[in-house]
Length: 286
Image (cartoon, rainbow, N blue to C red; front, top):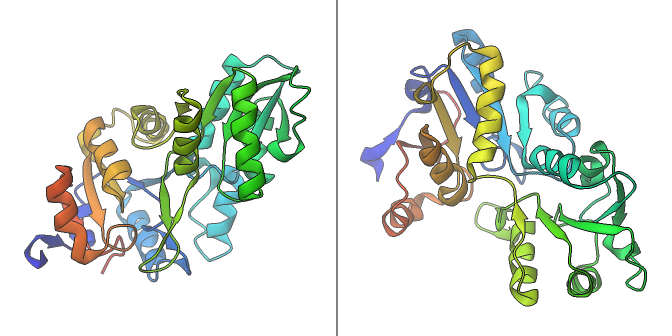
């Protein structure tokens, strides 16, 4: 394992742009990954463009960017954040008529993406199961902001009573809450409800190609004629970041600062068949 681990600083200079996952790469349960500010400073020095490609649909890009800026990473502005919620927003704009409501599971902040599409929102706790005339769609947005027992059961019964489009704006099944522990993410909740009611939901986020295309098109605004093999995808999870980047034609780095523990990395790579281009301890330059 040690023989295969590379230094991120030596790798990143071979690329014109970097796509970073957020949780486990740039930040963790304690805040910023120690030393990550130096990475952004180094990329600026070398003229390498960077973007944050995240399945986090809990807050708007502006709110997500503010979190970094409040911690000294002024380089992360809202235009550099590409979230799965943005894809869900575009879907709602195209598919749901004005005046109708989208019921959602998540925090009040996560409803931003639906409201930006010009639609009404209603938290699942406030849905009247006996009056569903104006509720045409449902969105899984976040794993917080609701009563897990009451509101998940209410979601199941809502989707059983009325046939409607269901969007999952975050496909993550878990996220790390400490160095060794994980918590259930909203993608897992959607998987469970989907299985219970026997219906298929529409999902947005890594590893789907749409997410990488969104980021690629954004990068093209900064770098003319940017080729996919000139982009490096940096992530901590094989089944979202790495396989998604691989399928889109990007070189990939699996970092061991998040979801993939160092002593399990080679086992997971071997068992899954998902092979990153590189393995690094962290995305910190040094």
